[in-house]
Image (cartoon, rainbow, N blue to C red):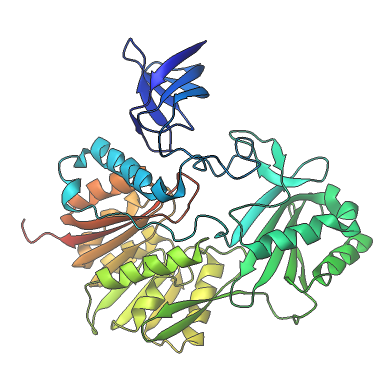
Length: 443
């Protein structure tokens, strides 16, 4: 059954919210505030109706025609119908809505700064992960489905990734091994403009198949290396490209700083931000907001490969970084060595165990960096006051868990000083937020 709805606002997840005549909430994707639309019920819950868009009767001036031929079928890029010039502001309003729902409604205007939009809306992703269907066609999963939507290119991917994908699937080698491949990852190494290809296979390779993967690795100058993983066996092959030696493949990039570039590396499969330009802008914000002097001590509880802590190292006394991923710590140590940075100590540890040990040992810090995964870091917050840090800088990719953790931090004596939404993921509803908190001098 279809029914008309006027969309009032967007909420977390990018869905539009409206009301039925009886007051029941309707949630529908693909709409904009103040639009008059026709929707059809997909699922009726006790407190809301989940609906799908049938027709836009009165479109918003912010609406545009999605340029991607896979829009509406591929499960990604759910904000392509929003004009790029307005996406950051809409995401900022989604963040505001979450702040309001979480109890910050009367206060957030005092600390929420204007958003930081991305300069480029397309061709920014440095990595993509594709599934392979039963016909050997790579693509992305459809929305809320395990069905693959085959693609030949992605508008969000850097051109090098699309070129590599075209090479992989157009040659005779692909047809010989496609039935083995469950997933393909394409990772750009920006510094040398080459691509690392990771194949995830359903089983180990036979000798003839291994030869084919060698041919793929050497088949195009764009390919830096090919890594082959088999189900239940981990990595079974690391094959260099035609212009690369047998050394371990690394993704290379630079971070520009006022006093020179940092040379950075990350192992394939390790975490790094997908949008290099916005990552640089985020690091610039972090450096500007950090209130720590030349003798100050910095703790980075989710340090990864040193993306935030190493750019700070030159202006502080020391950095202590920890991360649970072994490859991330290897990369952080390597990056410190490459840049002759000697005041950083990185160790493999969980954030919870690490902060507990630091608190028990009486360690004190001036600044704590928190860049947790999507689920946030509620479990570590109770230990932070013992570290006596005057400032916390929190970087989040999930507004809901961010707001939850900010409330917990306030209970521990920290006040929100400023907050900014960074549009790290144009054409999607996802957003990044950086928050500065300072310790309260009262109580």
